[in-house]
Image (cartoon, rainbow, N blue to C red; front, side):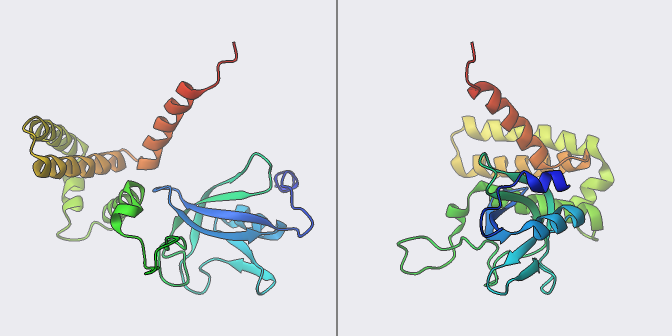
Length: 221
């Protein structure tokens, strides 16, 4: 661990900026700072720790509110002077109660939270993943996901095939409302099937990311 800490360019202040990113949706949650001790605690305990510049002390995110950030991975940038915490948030990142601290748009006089269109697919799919995970873990009575779990991966696989067919039919009929509804059903059942296999949407995203990197890799020949 000491070797990892030494690779970071701490600078004169002994602090580096840290971006917290939702590991499932890819959304940026907050910007904070870390010193050596904060990074050490983060790596040791698996929960996000920062350095509070206003209080001048170590800050365990969510220690009081319960909105901890479970750290799945820590990355540093090409200059080794900034960190990225890829986290599973247990609640809102922002002290205002917003999920992300970056909820205001420059030039928007209302300065309200961005709407669903601005949030994008990453947040929506991330929320879907968390709901599916919670339902499969708790198996609440009356839950559709719990019923799918009871029937098993084979049944869910058949539902994926069924929804895929209905999605194609709706697309060919040029019925946008039906097409989008069927596509949503397809994504939902596919998310459940992925979860039943012990995987998550970010595992699928990593495969796509790897394929993209292979295609855009510079030609060294």
